[in-house]
Length: 308
Length: 266
Image 1 (tube, chains in turn yellow, blue):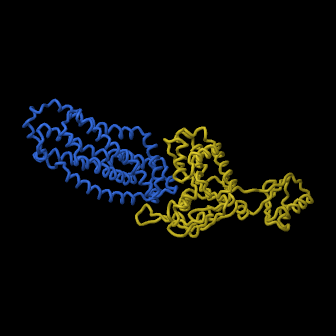
Image 2 (spheres, chains in turn red, green):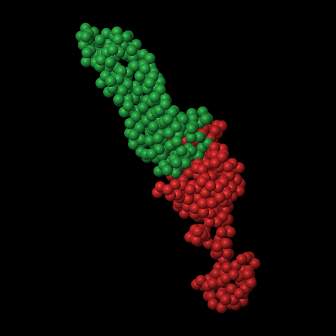
């Protein structure tokens, strides 16, 4: 649904004669129906990438295809076929929520603009406030209105740039629920976010990006690649000899003691765990609890971005 | 160019801009003021009898007296006075669209609503045409309406049929119905250019207001007797404006580059 090949964007710098590379040689692809997370620090070039893929700005080098259309050649058709939630919702504050949506529905050539606007106002829980000026809306409501605007023309591909940025937890949850429901409809979603928990929960795959692409993979694979799978054995007491013995068992890559816990790094815990448990029990250990140690996406992100 | 999208942009602009009290006052009050002022002058000079005025117009610029031709002296005086005010009808299409365009374009900047708009299939030409028409049409309508109102009320305020025929003459018809729209187009494109460089609607409005300086030149030139506003002059102004409009439309479109707007407008 989205393919980029060597996509590069260079802007003129503040000082005459200098340049700033915002996006450098970016290559990746997003499949139909996928929720693709695009993570990176401030100033990494995420918004520039979204603008490139939505045909709002042109690339300096490289190519990109969105929904089978080529940026730089089919720009108007791309804008017709994608929906974008910009970083700042940017509403016409003096106009009602309904009027805001009807204007955009007309610009997208939607057959019955009023009916379509009504559909999304109801879907996102804004129907009762449809006649109120958009300027009177809370941040969360504005964000939902902006999502409705992005959906009016039923785009197959949605670009969401920081959809929960600056929202309180309740509003952020409403927006996340809306994204999950869109995911359920099978739309392809390109999600730029700083919220790693949100990315972990919503995204099928994640790209970590800092001007250049650092890596792309599923959240689970990213964890495994960095940390492998780790199992924690909570014991009443821990003998140093047990650590050495467990480290030597087949399938165990490493073992270390952390307080009364034994942290074991294994490739396939489902196969190796029973042998470790048998060994510990035979050695006289009181095994209280066994669990998988799950690193947060934040750990993965920080590790990757700091080495990028 | 998709007319449906242009129409939508015009509707949007009007729906938003006319919720701004300042813009409403500019569009409504200015034409009314510029109509009532010359009517008041006419009404005030109504009490001056033809006898009292006969032979007493020698203070008027000689070039203007020549242009009066066979008019009675008091009629020549009335036409002279009214001519000063009719120039204001050429100012209106400059002032009104400047207010609207400055708010409509800089307003998009301040509310950050331009990016979602540019993300739609609307082309730059459609966007500029929509915004331009939204700013120019009320100005042109208000100017034409005010002028026709003035022509209709002038006899009631004391203008003789001869004076009315001098007001509703080819000179002023060209000035109001041809030069007016050309002025509006110039003002809108100038406002687009200025708006792309500033962040405050008032600054854009004030800078765009510089356009009225040449019109003031016409007023002072006429008072000083350097210029007589007649049909050849108006036709010359119209041709010059048409050329300036073409240049302004080109420059306005150059300045209004999507990428520059998104990446440089802060």
